[in-house]
Amino acid sequence: MKLHGKVVTGMGNFSYWIEKLEDHYYRKTAMHFYPGTLNVELDQPFTLPHIVTRLEAEEYGGTVSVNILPCMILGRRGFILRTDANEQGRGHHPKTIVEVASDVRLRDHFGLVDGSQVWIEVLQT
Image (cartoon, rainbow, N blue to C red; front, side):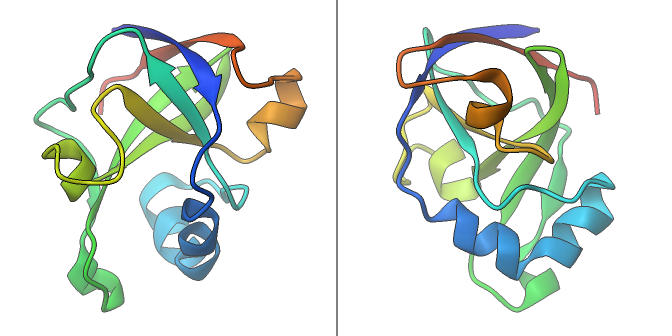
């Protein structure tokens, strides 16, 4: 499945959680994430597939569980991160927003700015 959208400015709070939970994310993905995500506003709402990797709140003593879905963005490996609240339509982001984490700052790596058009290929889990 391929998703299309444009880069938008995020809220900036996933960077805190990526740093705080770095070991947990690494255990789930085998990737050390850059502390921040690339927010992409999709052309259409996106619902996660039924089978995804999850970081459960109980695993780190928190209150928020995160769905982790492997993807390729502009040919680079990454992961879509989406909280349960956002997936259920009651979080900070509508279902047209996905947050992509990778091992580099994607904006710098690809020279992306708000409005840049990107394709995200969702990979099978």
